[in-house]
Image 1 (cartoon, helix red, strand yellow):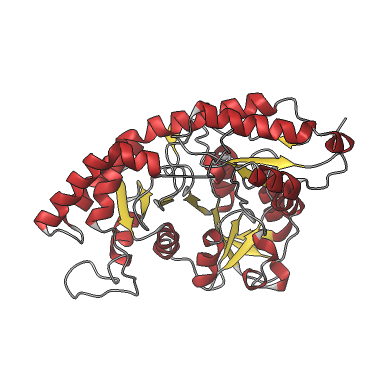
Image 2 (tube, helix red, strand yellow; image 1 turned 180 degrees about the vertical axis):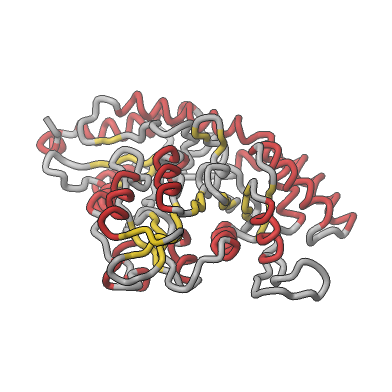
Length: 401
């Protein structure tokens, strides 16, 4: 019997299926020697704006740069407080600190792993007051200026509540939608639900480039102009420098790769959703497994992440991870350390928060293989291997009642 070998993620089949079109697009860039900026980048920006039904797309070098640019465009002040999630890739918080601001971590929802709006509202009611048009933190006197929710693993945060909170407290929203392109909340696409949406096109994303790439999205013409200037050394044109900026450009080779793949995105996401449905069905009766559920909008399953715990709440992740690896199935852990426990992100003692749900999830979460080109046979192999693990006699004592 052939041993299984199922990676957590692979681009091999997708590249093979689209290689001819990709190479032809690359040849156009090479023949025209249009490597930086130019018509290829502009065409992708317009293509993405049309897909998102958004007014402005400002491409850049990476998702991290997109967050930095968004914060800069919104003029985050020194010591500005931004409320964000402790369960995410670190860039959603480091770019706040990089501007001299303070990330304040609000715990996550148990079901979606996204920031909990009810806890966010409660934090503001307890710790802040409104003075003129500014929200002030009581203990430090620092201004509270915004919210950075993360559309984690492909599902949008609860923007109905977040918008209500932002309006009440005069806060802006930067939507970190690096993992959720193609998702939606109500009638709007992920990335268009805040003042600025920040995208990553890292190769493993649902829409991936062949290297680092990112974009900011907005409907605000003033913010769009600021973003264009910020990404171009703080200048509008020529050598007319107006402010501190960065050099963050999407190169044309990445732009044409993304342009080739964007028309395929919805199909890729549909396949991810079909795989997730197979997983959900297979694990529905396993008492030790919490499966991801579609709660806020249209989920596109960038990751399929489960919680595995025994009846007492103790994590069974290590045991399952090891068992799957022994049987040729690769898994990933996103994220093993909640951000509120990282010392350099705790920028002020008075702003420290407890995030017990994020701590629990970080200890017990495991991401199973999830990529659109997985075959049904591979998906079922993962399902049956997980089921077999929990059917072992030694696991019976861990089963919840």
